[in-house]
Length: 341
Ligand code: ATP
Ligand code: MG
Image 1 (cartoon, rainbow, N blue to C red):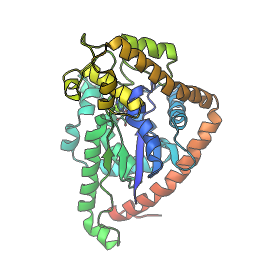
Image 2 (image 1 turned 45 degrees about the vertical axis):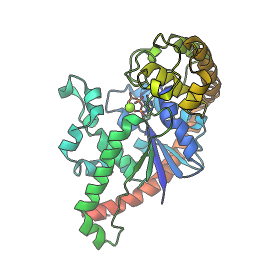
Image 3 (image 1 turned 60 degrees about the horizontal axis):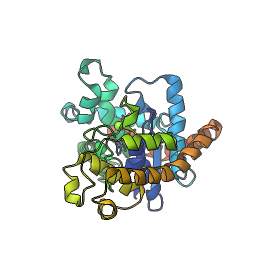
């Protein structure tokens, strides 16, 4: 059974990278798969979140899903903390995953920074919770940005180790040998890693202090235009081959953004704009970005003005999610050897 799971953290400042790397792809997958899209609030609190801001951000991420075209009726939109299976399964995975595996995770190193002793235990165990998110639904496909590739590999390792460690118990219960599937990352298209507009070597991120580094999904047309005009580039005209893009990170980034927004690819964008000055291309990019984001921004605004409706979508999603995850958890408890009610 093919099933999609993915999540976005309610950590504020949803940006173009989140849209192109994740949310836009969520929409595209709805015709082909049964999909669960989750506002991962348990993940968010691995770093400090102001409670009132968190609540606002949860509804804002849900609104972004819906505004972009996710169908919360046909598919499942919910927030993680409403379904207790995520935290329960994460604990079991804390006991399956090895310290050595987590020690290799680059996101922890980046987010913990120099003051590692002071990072939360949750930030360290984050990848185990992410494995639980996916495997609670025995999801087979996970659309994410490039930055999540390593965490997906860990989820696959956890699934495999669980299946191996408990193979006898799984067989005794008459369950499928591969109780947890190997979830496949869906990382594709021209914008799997959207970079900062100020620094072609850093990913566009919610937590980056400089607002000029990212296009927020709440930015208006003037803000978008100003940020794209000021975006860092090299002094040369636009590359004329895809090969040339590899050595020009800022050009590569802007061309990738254009291609993703236009549902095209880098080669086609270069065929159109290669050799032109950046000032010309940037104007085209402003027009395209505004035309694609403005309707989403407007719809998000409309939706967040009615939190009752969003809460109802989240609640109904959580009920349906719980039905699937609860069944997995009953099996998992039997497999591990717990006594159930
Ligand atoms: P934070 O800094 O709080 O981690 P974030 O911008 O990385 O925020 P997440 O909520 O962690 O956002 O990620 C949500 C989804 O967006 C994930 O699938 C992630 O891979 C994707 N994503 C995040 N940043 C980018 C980016 N710059 N380009 C493409 N995809 C991205
Ligand atoms: Mg992130």
